[in-house]
Image (cartoon, rainbow, N blue to C red; front, side, top):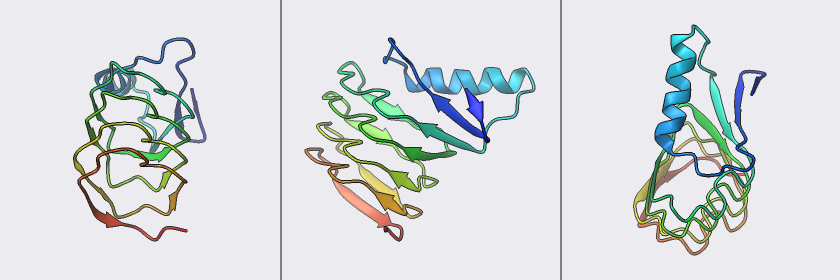
Amino acid sequence: KSTNNYLYLKLGADPFLKSSDIYFLLETAKSKNIAEPKNIYFDDYIFDGCTSLTSVVLPSNTTTLKNNVFQGCTNLTTINIPTTITEIKASTFRFTKINNSINLPNLTSLGGNAFQSSNITEVVSLGSIT
């Protein structure tokens, strides 16, 4: 669903979308001359509890990760978070096993417990968090 130049990803009963599926979605839109949105927004709970998810590459124009997006993805060990991220809501990466470093120079909002019980090895840069 696209409104106000945001791509909303809501999966309903199928929360097992792979990051390659997101790229396929964007490439299909381009091939049909549908403009790629300037910002991509991942809605609340979209991958919550998806234990089959092991790695994620977020699209480079992702700006917002809402509440509990990856919470409980207990086998998620690697994530590529683009520097375009400005907002990470509560418990987004809670109870994951992410073990890589992250760089968030444009981050302006970080929710409570966003990285609780994850294994982040290093935070390279944080923006001006409010």
